[in-house]
Length: 52
Image (cartoon, helix red, strand yellow):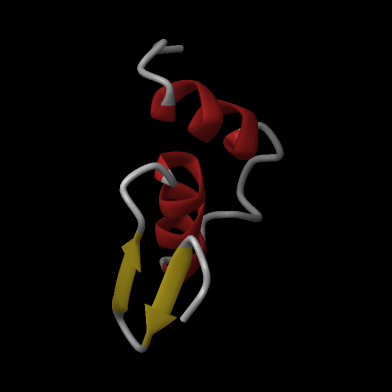
């Protein structure tokens, strides 16, 4: 697949540079993406190793 993140059932994988996309895919897979509107911004910060 020509995609940064791939999901198949319970398996989520990504290219080495797609940290924030991978985190959001995992959160989506466990049903947490709708829990907090701040999650995409937090995921981006965490993926760049900046912390909160």
